[in-house]
Image 1 (spheres, rainbow, N blue to C red):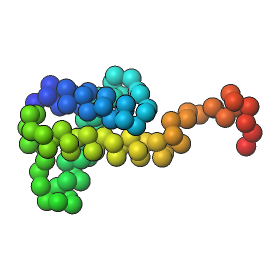
Image 2: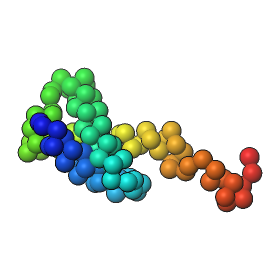
Image 3: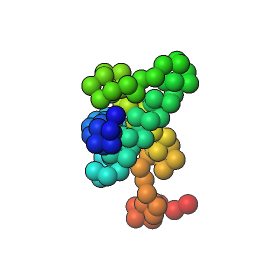
Length: 97
């Protein structure tokens, strides 16, 4: 796939994954998450099932693999960042450590 196809795939898959996970990001972050998710999903599918799912833009397995990878990536981001809470949110809400 060409670079434009990767960007479009990343944008669409990132938007869907963001909405499913309930954590909307900006357009650039969403696109990067989608592209990274597509690559992650393809890598996982190759390692676990020995199949190459990133075959073409109009192939359904490409989209499913990209979506699954984006969901995994967002889940890891939520675990690392504490569910989307940024630094300093506990102070704004008056909670003490």
